[in-house]
Image (cartoon, rainbow, N blue to C red; front, top):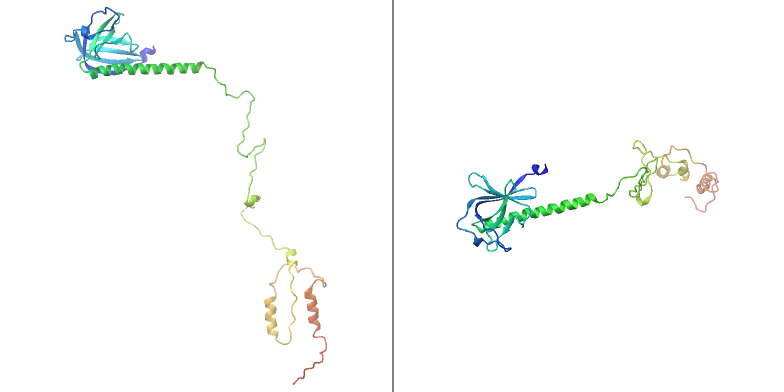
Length: 274
């Protein structure tokens, strides 16, 4: 059934071939074309080589009608189905067969030496391909007969995967590590994308010492006011700093000394007033 489904392909076609009846071979020596009547061929026509599966067929057909004259199945080359003669490269001996099982040996020859070369190469290429197919099929069969390696998981078998430095724990997902400059961890921004700056604390304000106000003098009051406005810090709405003790406040001593000056009696002076 498989042979019937195989396609028949054409390997070579030669339009001129001569067929000769040859005498039986008397000894084990090879055939000689000089023993034939080369100038009187018994039949002339067209030669066609086809293949179907691994078997090649040499078909002798009529040039005009294409009617089959004889056919020689070739299962091996070189072999008994096709033989070369000993005295020429343009002549061959082939074994033809009919459907009843009868066979006979006839001689064929080509006028052109190139046609004989193509005939020979077509048969060689076909059986070279057959040899390669046989080896591939044999290797494939040996691979099928080898014990197969079972790589499937057994019942209850598990595996553990380690991808880089990320390790997963059962029941929870791994936490990503956020690294900043210098290897320090940075907190994510608060929800809403706004950052609130905390107000200045009272501790920071208490560390800043505010100088006491300078009393206005009777002379040059306008200049003292300008200096006082320039030196005085901007008003702060935060609570007033805690009072500083007199022992630690140098400005307190200065304020006390300056405030006592107007209450003292004028000292006698050695200068004469004019």
